[in-house]
Image 1 (cartoon, rainbow, N blue to C red):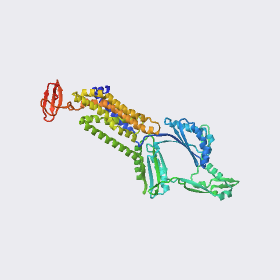
Image 2: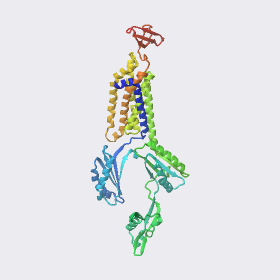
Image 3: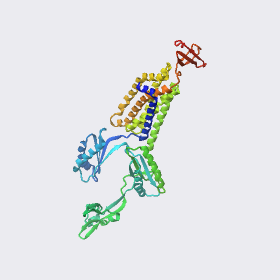
Image 4: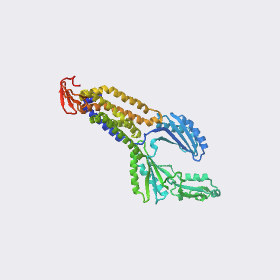
Length: 540
C-alpha cells in the first residue's frame, strides 16, 4: 500500500508528519472550551408582551388573537404556543433546526411591527429572546450579613458586586434576586381628592409631566448653535410634595395636600433564603462562546477577593457551581478513558507476549486520541461529556487496526521474513480488511450525527468524535505501526516457530538465523546451537 510503503521508505518524513499532527492536536485541545453539555441551541424564540392592568380575557382578545395570524406567516415556523396571563402575553415559536434564528428574530419583529397599529396603545414593546444551553447559570451566589440590614446588602449587591462580576471575561449577564428595590410610593387620600376636586388622572399626569428632562429647542447664532434642555427631574422625595397637581385661579393644589409620599421599598416578588436567613442572591450566566470551567474559575477567584473587602459579619458564598460540576463530570470520563486504555494495553501484552509489539500497537492510542481533538476543534464542538464519551467508546476500537496489522507482520516474521519485508507484505495483505473494518464503524456512527431534531444536536459531537478518531487510527495503523515494525520491531527469530532439532534432538529448539541455506537453532533448554545445511530436513 502507498501509505505503508511511504512510511517504511521515508521514516523521517513520517515521524515529522506524526509529530506535527500531535502538536496541532495539543494546540487544538488547548483552544477547546470545556463545558458540561454541548452547546445546543433549541430553535425556539420567545416573545413576551406586557399589558399592565389587563385581564387574561382582554389580553387574549386584544393581543393574542391579533398577533397569531401575523406570526404564522413567518418562514420556518413549525408550531406556535400562546399564553394569555393577567397583564402579559407570551408566545413560543418553534422553528426548523435549519432555520437561522438571527434572521428568524428579525422576521418575528417585522411581523409584530406590521400589526402594531391594531394593538393597544398601553401595551409595552415586545421582548424577544432565544433559548440555548448556555442560558443556565454557571454560578449562583448568596450574600448574607449579621451586621448589615437587608436593604444595605441589597444596595451593596446591586451597586458594587454585580458590576465586578460583569467585568469578568466570558460573563454575559448578572441577575440580582431577593433584593429590596427602592420605590417612592404616592398614597392618595380619597377625602382630600374630593375636597379639592382633583382626579387620579390629574395626579398621574402631573407626576409624568413635572418629573422629566427633555430637549425643548435650539438657539442658533452666527457662528455656533446651542441646545436648550428642560431639566425637570426631581432629585429628592421631599421635592415631590411640591408638585402642582391643579390650579384654580390663584389657588394652587400641591401633591402633599392630596397624598402622602413615602420613600420605601417595592413589593417583594422574589425571596432568597439560605440557612433560614434572608439574603441577596446573584445568578451569573456565561456567554455562549466562553468555557463554563474557565468562567467559573474566574468567578471563584473574584469571590475570594470580594470576601476580603466585605464588612465584618458579611460574607458571600457559592450555592451552585456548574463549572465545578462540569469539571468533575469531565474528570470522571477522563479517568474512565485512561483506565480503559491501560486495560486495553494489558490485554494486548497478554496475547502478544512482547513488550515491543505491545508498545508499537499502544502508540496508536495517544496519537489517535490527540489527533481526534483537531476534528473536534474544527467542527466547532466543545470538550464535554458527549465528546469524551465518544473517545471512551472508541478506545477499544482505536487499537484494533494496529493489533491486526502487527499480528500479520509477526506472522510473516515467523515464516522467516526479515522485519522490513514482513512490514511491507503484512500491511499490504491485511490493508483491505482493516480499511473495511474501519469504514464499517464509520458507516454506523456517521448517520447518528445527522439525526433530525434535538437528539441529533446532542449526539452529533458524540458520533463525529468516534468517526474522526477511528479514521485517524486507520491512518496510524498504515503508517506508524509498519514503520516501527520495520525499524524497531522484535529481533529476528524471536517469533520463529518452536521446532525439534535433528542434530541435537532437543525438545524445543528456536530458529534464530537463516542465511545462505543454513538454519541456526538454539535450544531453549540446553542453550546448544547447531547448524544443518539441508533446508528440508530441519523439522522432525
